[in-house]
Length: 413
View: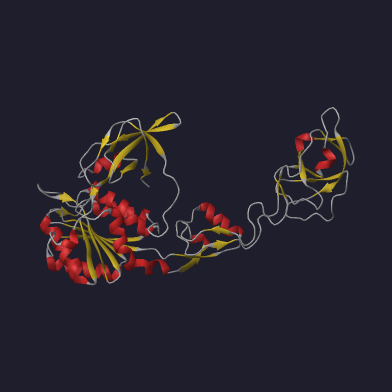
């Protein structure tokens, strides 16, 4: 299958994702139930409704005295409102009786208010006049210094949407609802293989013309950071049968297979040929309208995704970020609507190449803002990725962005 074939006109990122999507929708129907304690970073497979109101009792947010707010109106330091104190509510206990007019009850932060109480006076606004008599030196409004029943959550409301990635705070929210078993997407299994006659294992000393494998480890790190189970399969030289053998094994053992390297046209055609031969539907695109990353190829082999990424380290990392990560986090189905952070561009960025572009940038603090400084350097240089804090995405129909303009950036995770 030559790259001149009609099928293999260069595709945009969005087109490449859309072509692949129908073949892998089944992945997002899978469910695995795991303990809440193991759920950090995992992706929910269903919306979660609140099982109960939170809090389920009226709760003080201060140490002080639960009161009827009306009994404190007009109170001041020179003329305190006088209340009879009816003891104290301890943590974890429910008050025994409702609060009558002109009375109060002492309580700790987080304590349960008695029926009839609708505010809490802070301890610093109380004067003890002896025995049960207290003076309130500052009036409180109804609802002050308390959290009402259901103020956090109402029973039955959806508290987490489908495909939410679970952070520490979501773990706490699920715990508050007594949800200790969590339905999540199984982790994607990602296999990574480096190819090329010039690539050697990192423990070897490179001879002239040879390079230690960088991409095997950058892609492994990116896959792990994306929440996948990832495995590095080492290096295979540009040999059709050796590559066929390893790819066949990788396709059996993984959901997503990443080949990197094969920068030469011949090596790329070798990978493209194998993707076409190993199963249906085979090769789906041959080249992306992306800079860096144009040589990327991709397809689906019997339900497994397979991508050939560029050999240049920065290109391979950027293609992973733009094309592979969205499958891992489910954003191909449910795009995240959180706005990206922004900063001020320090130099003109030119594009107009007929491709969309991802520019490596450093972030420089500028008071409370960020300056966004493009990193100049070729896509073969790993150091440019180490220096990069993030990426600026220039859309396909943008000529460029002028210095001084505000730009959105993606942080490297």
